[in-house]
Length: 160
Image 1 (cartoon, rainbow, N blue to C red):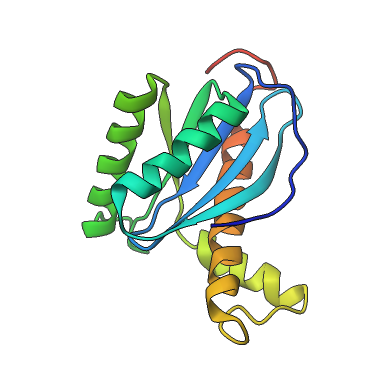
Image 2 (image 1 turned 135 degrees about the vertical axis):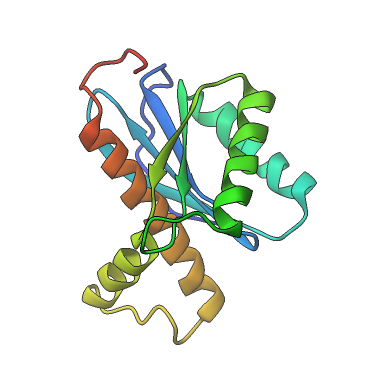
């Protein structure tokens, strides 16, 4: 698991954690409803659910969010597919484990947008240290989907 420094807001119900779910990696971002800005946090790697949820446990304990957001991958035409089903299953597990509301954001093209942002910053997402660059893409995709969520949410500390 690699990390990126993110500002440490006070843990409140206004904190929101977002997950860009994948079967190999999960990008994680954090934001605050009051400020309305999302930050990439980390990428959780591996396929072992126990290890993945141990990492998520630590992140939830650190940030103490009031809401969790999961990106829902749809086909470009808006239809659901196997990854949509797996992301919904992941969201149900989060809700049951943490007792927090889980909301969804359409994540179509969030990874593409993340790759483009990295290219604009001079990082070639599919070159060099491929593993690290894929982790950057995943946590940046989580930031993008969380920013979309925050942009659509009212600016208050209350849950929607």
